[in-house]
Amino acid sequence: MVRSALRVRHYSPRTERAYCGWIVRYIVYHGKRHPRELGAKDVQAFLVHLARDRHVGASTQNQARAALLFLYSEVLAISIENQAPMIRAASPERLPVVLTPHEVASLLSQLSDPCAIVAGLLYGAGLRLLEALQLRVKDVDFERREVLVRNGKGGRDRRAPLPATIMGDLRAWLDAVKRQHRRDLAEGAGCVQLPDALGLKYPSANREWPWQWVFPATRTYHHQPTGERRRHHLHETVMQKAIRRAALAANLAKRVSCHTLRHSFATHLLETGHDIRTIQELLGHRDVATTMIYTHVLNRGALGVLSPLDSLIPKPRPALNALSRPAFPGH
Image (cartoon, rainbow, N blue to C red; front, side, top):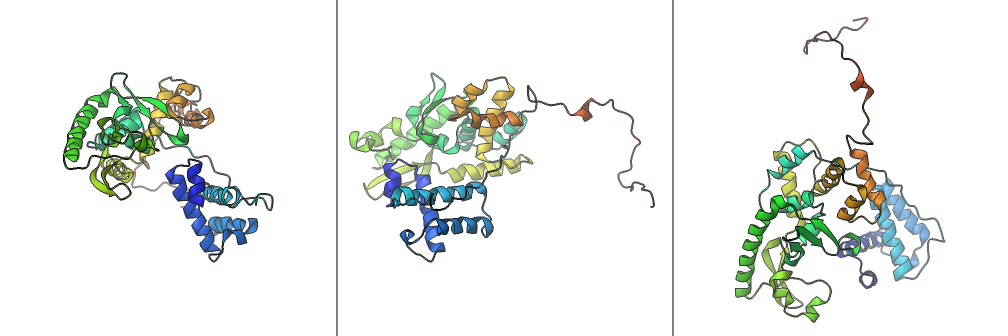
C-alpha cells in the first residue's frame, strides 16, 4: 500500500526505499503491531527513541517523521497531527566543505577514466553524483558545450555547461562505450532501462545508441520481467570509493566527498564574480536561499572580512627554542 501510494505520486525510488525502511522500523519498535492500532503518541515515542537512544541527526529524525506522516495521512487516511504536536527537530546550519582550486587539481590528478571524467563533470558542471552517472548519450551536446540533466532533484530538468577541458577525454570515452555497445548487441544484449513507459511507446529504443548510459557498468545483468540482458550505469559507490582514495593520495586534510566538488563549483563561481541567480539555475535550486549558503564560505568579496590581527604592524619577537619550556611565574 505504501509503495503504491508513493509511486502514484511519482516519488523517487530512493524516497520509496527510505520511507518503507522507516515504516518497518516503526512497526518493529512497537512490537509488530499494525499502524492502525497506533497513534500520535506512538509516533512521538518512536521519534524520541531515535533521538535519545539511537542518537540520530536532526535531518534523519525529520525524514522518519515525514515517512510516518505520509503513512497515516496518505495511506491509512488517518489524521494524527491534530492528536498531538509532531516533533520536528531543528536542523543546524552546516557550512559545506569547499576545496581550493589547487586542491581540486590535486584531487583530479589522482583519478583515472572514467572516474576522472565523472569528477570533471561534478566540479566543472556542478552536477550531483547520480545526475552525472545517469547521463545518456543523447544528453551530451558537444556543439553547444552543454549537458542536459533530465529528472534532477525535484523532477526538474536543467542545462549545465560542458567543460572544454574534458571534451576530448569524453569523446574518446564515448567511442570506447560505443564499441562495447556494438559487442553487446552482437551477443544478444545491449539493452538499457528506459524512463517511465517509453519502452511501450518505443519498443526498440532500449537498444539504440542515443539512449545508452554515458558511464555504463562493467557487467550486464538479467532483467527477469522482460528477459533482457541489460547494462546498468556505473554504481555510485565506485565513484565514492575513487574520490576517497584520491583524497588520501593527494594528502587533503579535509573530509572530501563527491558532493564536495559541487560545493567547490558554486563557491569558485561566486569568487570569480558570477551572480547568485545564475549559479542557482546551474545548480538546479528551487529557492535562491539554498544557494546563498555559498556566500558564507567566500574568503573575499563583499562578505570578506579582514581580521584585525592582520592589520597590526608586526613587531620583532624574541626567538623561542622549540624544545625549551616558557618560563612562568612561580616555576
